[in-house]
Image 1 (cartoon, rainbow, N blue to C red):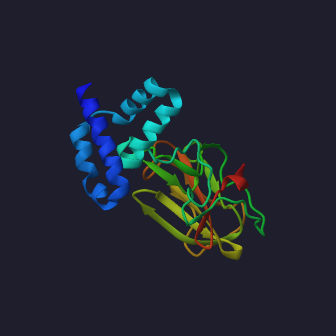
Image 2 (image 1 turned 60 degrees about the vertical axis):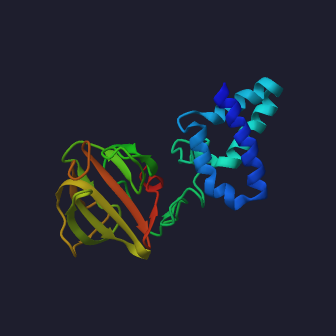
Image 3 (image 1 turned 90 degrees about the vertical axis):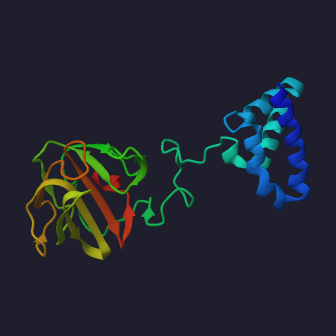
Length: 232
């Protein structure tokens, strides 16, 4: 209780300094917070005192005062993106991503038979465990399942990397490209011309993968598009 009372006095003092000498408050606010007890949830404590004195309105006022002085990080307010509640817009979408469905000017088909196991957008990386933007979709399927060309095009890359495993990339009309990753085998060659539905690879789990699947990406002029519109 003594610490709380002392902290309340400090808070009032800092509020005055905050509005009369903002530079000083910014410089020494962290030190004052440390004196108040960095391991204590003082944001909750001040809200509780406010609720005891004047109900929810007073509690909110106390909490807002604390946040205004020490900032949302010190008050324990998280600004991390909740991938399950994301409304994709200018503030939540990477610049190299367009979430809108495009009208493709050519015929196309689903590249492999299977079930979508991971969608386009924010997710916890299955290997690293950290939240990252997933720039394609994953289609779970059996190892060796035939992967077919999404549309007519040309094979522009056949390669292997630590992350993508064995992969192949095709270019299509009007600046569109597709990428097929984590393959167990590539059946196409760089420079080869393919037709929609031609077999180009076989599904697998090479690279950073936790099971057999196809990681499929669709790009337009170096912008990532959501492939789900075209494979469902």
